Image (cartoon, rainbow, N blue to C red; front, side, top):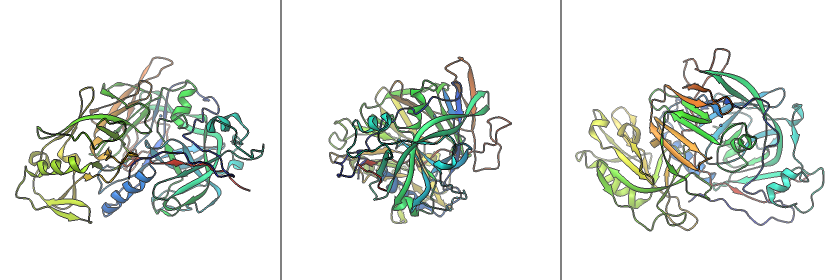
Length: 501
């Protein structure tokens, strides 16, 4: 099962909802600078839900913020966390909504009043709210005859009338769907105004108002109000804000797998500096060219015929995936070299999927460092305490998984998720089409630049899931969990669809 984004031919009563080009519906209502969102952890404290982590990855694979700061919380180990979500304000007056933060998808959408099969409650300890455009004085539903809708589909669609809403429909590979219409309204963000300080601001953004759901989206006990996509398409909130010239199309996250929480910021990061590699052009995801895999100094030869996306040995970087998925021709020798360091251990399977063993002592002293090498001499060091997680007492499990995903041309996919990017500052520079990272103390702070004034400000770590205070200013109520350690690979297929009366 590989990531796939495709358009289907519209039925007679349908409209092409494509790889959307929404554009910014209105200019930002505040000066250029950093902004802040609250992010909460989805699976915090659910140590018994190990099996749900891979199930979640499979689910997300099917569906596959100049500066904004997302206060984070939770921890990225499979036994402690999975999905992270942000609390954002929408409408006038503003109401709170909890949305999954997802680098693998594009649009922001929330469940709306009157929605069929949308969740009304969640087991995550958050109160769900159905968005009501009629309850917001700044809401403006987008109709099919508006330029925004026409540009979205690259043409006027058949049967359009002035009172017909501009629809969206997203279908995920696991069979779940969400459908509704586009609306423009204020989204409340926290703009960074000084060192560890922020103030609220509103910006007008176009997003999806979900009127119907099916599958896991409507029934999941880990239900949320919607999804906030951080993909590369023009439809993302990031792209909309950037198109107004108010923020740069750059964001970064640092996921603290030691203390929980971490850092998420939109805008130019000036400290720490990171080495980067080029993103593969014209891809729906954050693809990079992988050159080699090294285990304790021994290099695994990469097969030349197993990777997709144009013939290069590519990997997808997705901080929304919990684990790391490797093609079998890489996974098998990697596991052999890891376990060769401790030949006396007996591997056994936990929950029918995880390779586990009993071990007493420091895993960092007992197992090798795994390094992934990428184009541009960029390396990703994954330490034993990152790729091994404690399942119970002295039982440890390996977070590398054999891939069961394929690209459209039938080739296996390497997918590197949160497991290997914890305790690293990861920078997505969409202005220059690069991505990079560096080992970093995610409990500390980073420095971002205000593009308008040239001033630099500190953005601190957060942990919404803990009792610790946040670092974003004394007048803010922000608490913070970490960004989606399980932001999974979007495989969203956008179909043609028209709402009917």
